[in-house]
Image 1 (cartoon, helix red, strand yellow):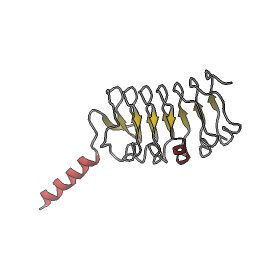
Image 2 (tube, rainbow, N blue to C red; image 1 turned 120 degrees about the vertical axis):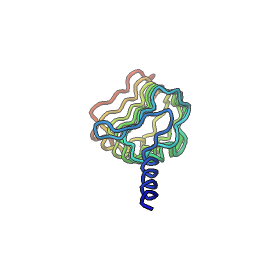
Image 3 (cartoon, rainbow, N blue to C red; image 1 turned 30 degrees about the vertical axis):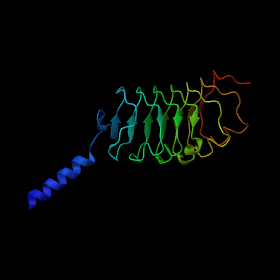
Image 4 (cartoon, rainbow, N blue to C red; image 1 turned 90 degrees about the horizontal axis):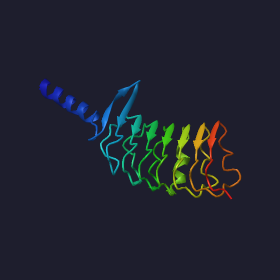
Length: 183
C-alpha cells in the first residue's frame, strides 16, 4: 500500500513539473523558466507548469495570440514574444497575467492589439512593442500601468497620439516613440 502511495505522489510531482515539447523548463536564479525560443512554433504549446514565472517564445512563427493563450501560467512575471509573426493579440490573451512585469512583443507584425488587456497588468514595468504595425493607441490604453518604467513604441505606424495618453505613467523613465510617421 505504501508503494502505491509513493507511486501516486511521484506521478503527481511528474505532472506538476511537465514541460511541453519542444520546450526546456527548469529553475534559474530562483525563477521557474520555460524556454521555447527558436523552436519554429506556430502556436503557444499547452502543458506548461503552473509555477512558470518566465516564458520565452521569441523567434518562432506565432501568427497571433488567442484568448486565454497564457491561462495555464498565471504567475508569469516575464513574457518574451519578440521576433515572431504575430499580427493579432486577441482580447483576453494577456488579461490573466496580473503578475507580469516584463512584456516583449517587439519585432512582430501587430496591427490588432487588445489594449483593454493592459488594464489588468498593473505590475508591468517594461513594455516593448517597437517594430510592429501599430497605427492607433487609445487614450486610456495605459491608465492602469502606474508601475511602468520603460515603454518602447518606436518603428510603428503611429500618426497621432491623443493628449494625455502617457499621463498615467507616473513611474515612466524611458519612452521611445521615434521613427513613427507622426503628422
